[in-house]
Image (cartoon, rainbow, N blue to C red):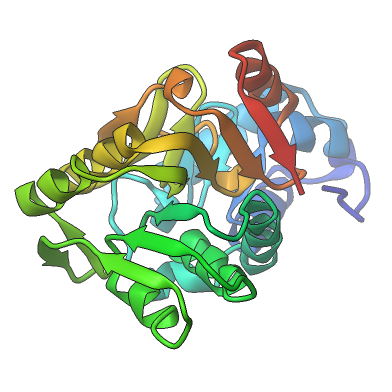
Length: 263
């Protein structure tokens, strides 16, 4: 991220804070390290600026940076609210995910906007079995020749997903070649997370049902925590994300033996 402005040392405090706020609103987040380098200001000063913005309810502080308040993973935004965020990144991730699939595979798709993008990419295949808990994904694939299995359960209207004991029981009887799992938060020390406890239980059952587990999430999901843990990092095999993934998170993933695909 490059700031086409004069050096931070020449800026007034309010001017600098307004600049940080504009970047947060534009990109959904800022990183302390990037802003320190771009503005030529100490990391301590940037942290104080972000703390100030949080105190005014204008930003949500996270480890290493700040997010827009609505990006808090303790909240549970609707599918429609998430649809247009990081759209290009999601499309690139979807293409990379589809390249891991072969005709004849059984593919397990979690609910979410990134996995919906993957479902659209999968339509170029001829013969697939797709298992999903997402009503909208089943609809996306309804006109294909795929065998589409929509698991049962209770509908979560926010995400168009089916959750609960019925969903978990059905997944316990299934086996997939590959799972594409979207997440709301990914702390590389703790694991993959979601705001909804019932969703986390279904996601965990999906992980158990799949031979290969691929986490699909753009880089804004990293260094973020949410309410419910799905699985620790060691439970996944591959991560597909965008090229803005931080070096620290990249190192944490690769040192854990996880394949990282950046697009």
